[in-house]
Length: 254
Image (cartoon, rainbow, N blue to C red; front, top):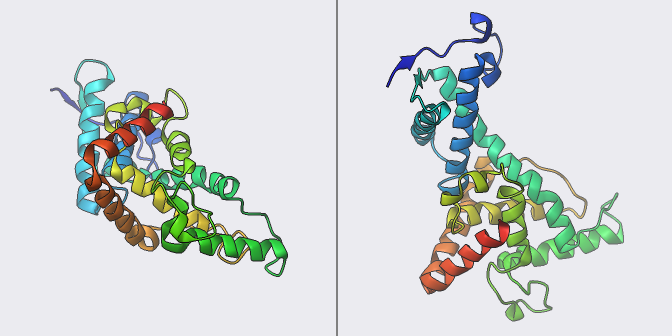
């Protein structure tokens, strides 16, 4: 395939943080498409890839984006600067999930806005927070029964299907729609990311008053791995049934 230099807008190297708009329109379009392709890798394969994996995905996304651009299979030079632009989407991709999850967690589980930790509402929030996080009770269909022993329906709380749609299938341009093949059925990795995000947003109520906290890899990576392990065990109980459940989540979201 023909190779071309990735030319800057106005033929000048811009100052400041690298961004897609630094480049001429045809190159910018390829960068934006590559970023989109990079996103589905984060959502369905590994939300916390190491540096080497990020570069592999960025190169693959660039190749796919160049091929798709105009049907001419024109390949633009992939520079370290462009790789950095694509990789930078990693944390923003996870942040988009948290932004979607946060209000749904409050609405679904019934946390109440409280202005002071000493209020009755704050105390009720703490009780709810402790109950929901007790052995991941928040994931169960019947999660607020008086006794944990009475809970049932692992991963079947309605918030799961609601968030799958909110995070990945909001409209025809959503990543789950554009890259359907990677989300049908919903991957275990995607579910583990959503579970981790729900847990994080519940933990924001730990003092009784909501405190927004960043979704940092170093803080949540172990939780993600734990949820993924739990989901893998769940899958092994009956691969056919669990696949049908994950397929149903996808179909409902669309």
